Length: 287
Image (cartoon, rainbow, N blue to C red; front, side, top):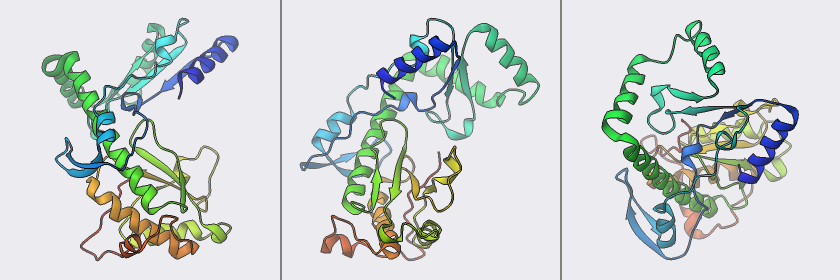
């Protein structure tokens, strides 16, 4: 969300005396604009994988990211309750986060915790406290976040390049500016009105070893299984798996819609091969 929109939301809250719950688990994973050029080079990632990337893209990945100010940072009335999570920036299974809010609100949340969840895991809290206070300190924490943004920027850029190569004309998508997911709307063409198109696509994806999350569980207004959205994660699997997985997704979409990628070529078509049972390259949707 842009700074202009954040200021506008805060102004509305002031006008109508509303509280704001700023639930922002991806705040520290803000990413720069997508950059791609034709000049390529092989680069090694922090996770040990290697991939062909652009010189311009590599420069963007390593550039310190200036974060868009949070709603909390512009709060002058004590109306913002901010929620942050360690799960997206340290480890998913920590199941631990933190709340920033006025003291009178925190006191009530504390009471609610004691009568419901009884607090997050003590082991998780102890590990996080030890790491932040005794091992990393603030400098180490900031260095970790910058490295994470750099790795995710590089992964996102490679993923988007593979989407453009293999799914042009088959999907609509937006380049994420934070987080670890790419949302895509499937273009089924003449099959768009077919209520079974999306369930059949999910079944075809399962058979060819591609795993993405369907959009329906994320809907706030009751999307049906026939709605044509997928969420792909680029944070987990090796970047070398992006291209074969997206090529097979293109094959699955083409099998239902009859459409071929706008960027199709003999080389691209040759890559649309259904994997054997021992070569499943999935774009995982966890996180």
